[in-house]
Length: 342
Image 1 (cartoon, one colour):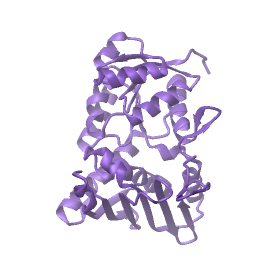
Image 2 (cartoon, rainbow, N blue to C red):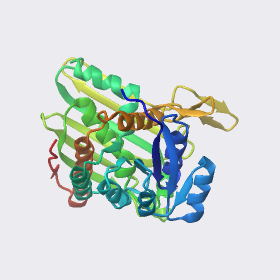
Image 3 (cartoon, one colour):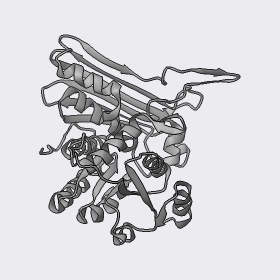
Image 4 (tube, rainbow, N blue to C red):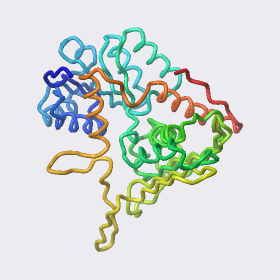
């Protein structure tokens, strides 16, 4: 392996996710965080000052500096293509937050641009860097459950998450994309057909044009079936901010994940809390966990020229499933998932 100095990198987006990107990269000894890119000058400069780097308003300004080799994109999903396209066209390595894009058409365009320029593209499917999910995949690969028959996956969060999102993204893109990816990756099968429905009662009363939850029945390529449920519908007094579950059942066994909290419960006067430690725990004043592992993998793979853990075709297949679910919500019918090559 050829050793080299730290990778010059920039973060596009200074919101909540962009700040997480910036912190993880600033703590990675193999990354050199150079810029925060955000059109909101006040917000962008504040984040840049916090992490000791520069600020520019546009990706074009960042590219003009010529020194940045890699970028991470943490803007609303409808803006992923707009932000990533000029970076990929310039041949830069890019990590785009999940989902890859807000539509299959946009995701296809992103891949075309990357293929044409030879740029390296990775999509941040976070739970591929979580040992619990990886152990489930390995068990299925080893034949532990036999022939896959049926499965279920769910992700629920607080209503305030949807309220904070202000209708900028569907619960399907913001939360559900994780489980759509995980159930296809762990089972080793792609979803081919979906039937879905939504409920939108609470969000509209909060002034938010969004679903409360979406539930879908899915069919896999082998004929196996499954159920997906995603919602920002949990009451505020629930002790943990995420309630995640997954189960795959086969002819010989079952793999199951239940993540109500992290195993730690704090009982205090008038409240019970379950702190989150898996995604971004803090140890010795540094973030560790799956988020740090994901970004460490991206930086290391760019520096060493090795394969990314998330193939672009897998990320596109997740977008294709979400596209079909949203079509089914509108039509009330079964909808085919558009096949993705690769």
